[in-house]
Amino acid sequence: MIIKSFLNWVQYAPSGSRAQAAGALVRAFLYSELESSEYSEAEAALTFLLDDRDVTVRIALAEAFGAAKIVPSHIISALLVDEDEVALPLLSGATTIPEGELVDLVATGSTQRCVAVASRPEITVGLSAAICEVACEEACVALLANEKAEITPNSMERVVARFGESRDVKDALMSRDDVPLQIRHMMLRRYTEGLGDHPQVLGARNMRAPEQLVADAQDRSTISLAWSASDKELHGLVEHLVVSAQMTSVLLLRSAVTGCFNLLTSSLARLSDYDEDQVFDALATPFGASLRRVLSAAGLPDRTHALFQECIASWQRVENMQIDHWSKSRIVAGDLIALEDELGIEDLGDLQDLLHRLSNEAARESARTRVAEMLSDVA
Image: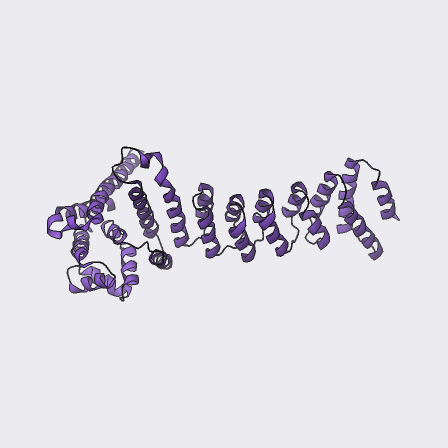
């Protein structure tokens, strides 16, 4: 009788009163101990209110139902396809929503709805894959910022492929703890690709082509990632570099001159038939025949072998010097430049230019280190 009276009243009540009554009816439906007939009548009344002409009534329903874990499926479906201001309280609440409906929303919904879905506390692998595949950039950023979301490396890779140039995507991705090193490398590479149009790259002060400057930035980012990588992460990065054809002689020489031997060792092992222990032993005796065999097996041209041998030997000479790492790298680059004629470096094209750039880079990094130490002493 109470529900019937409510239905009779609600047809003529003002919208504000109807909205308040709708919220109260939802709470009674969810939390009161109703008899089965009363429960059925209340459900029918709430279903009737889904068609209310005033959006405030439907918002009141969504807000009240949003606090509940379990909601009748037909009510969920109706509220989710309503206007954004009706659907959002339900999407942002605690209600369990079938994954299929969430996937449909991601594929067809507004930016606000997609962001709300991506921000939900429980994001399965399947739902996150759908978001990464078809959702807007804002939703992908929200997903990456959602620490509870389960996101596979393949899904992360898809986001990078779609929105890798976005600073927001980059920041959200880099802030996660579960991002594999190869995905970080992909993100940095996509981001640096956009540097080709930067005014400082295009400016007259640069004597080199923009694509060369971008390639340098990409290789520097690769070295930076490799420095602190675990063995597992490093193997994943090296595999990614090889498969994506980014493992070049220029990158290998940069690894050698900068003293990034974990990347150099892992890369040579991956490219050759030798394991990492064998590569490590070969590097320990740079002028032995074993290193030339490793370099040949790794596909490096014979004309580069002497350059790598001298580089490794130079590092052995400077390793125990009481100077910072970049000062050592600068000495190594200088040693190789001094041997240009003997090593035939002039005929090595990009590698000759690289040595001079690495010497300059090492000098600047060493200066930064020195200045930081001096400022630390002053403080």
